[in-house]
Image 1 (tube, rainbow, N blue to C red):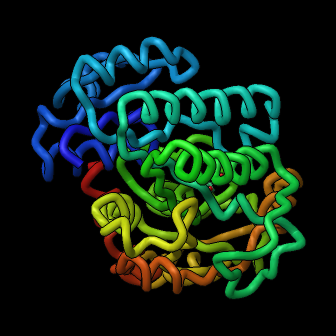
Image 2 (tube, rainbow, N blue to C red):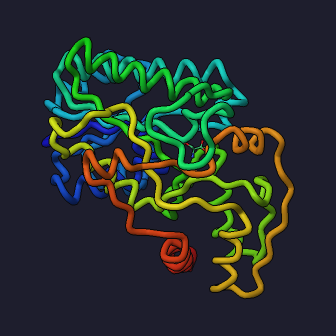
Length: 316
Ligand code: SER
């Protein structure tokens, strides 16, 4: 990776990925892009920034050519809850954007990363220690686009030799940019509400386990996988990775250690609860560890301490 184009860079992942890439690879070697260009935004102001609507392939190609990028990190997509509300739009953006980005990568011989998700699994998938290679019959439009995306990336690798790589992200928790309409967002909201109001009403019911990861580990995972020796990769699209698995009462109990008066109550939202119920309790990431040395630094306790400290600083 020498010159990297990132799409959807103002989202939850992109905001932190671009910052880290600029630090590691130099700010003239990272081309940040999004469909909007808000004034005063730190990512927009902090280096190269271009407006790209991922449905406009010609514009994407033109920007990639202009900066002679050798790597594309394609992040622009709709998340699970939004995709369930607007399934046709989700198909258009998630698949249309992906095939455009893959075409640009093919034409310019770029390395390629795009995230898949625990949403690529469904109710028929083994729920505990979900293996890398297993049944993938998701029942959500988000999941349909993620499985299709994994297959499409594999196809571009075998058919055209594009160096495609990906991970199945669990719920990502962070304090810089908010997530945009996912099922796992409760595990981000809870920290904001704990500090602001000392209580949180969870739209995910108690006892619902899902995999999660703190953003610094997610950013490291992307960079480590992209820098990994290709000859070691038996899998490509996409690797199971996780840092922890918990249910809402457990994250609440951890927050209570820092904010003793914190209270959680439950009011499950039928749509997001159904999505969560169809996802694994915890996935197995042995292949990622073996093939490219995936490692997570943050567990629930370490993440909670850091989240609360950083959010307090941010809100101060
Ligand atoms: N965090 C995502 C979502 O909930 C999962 O990939 O949609």
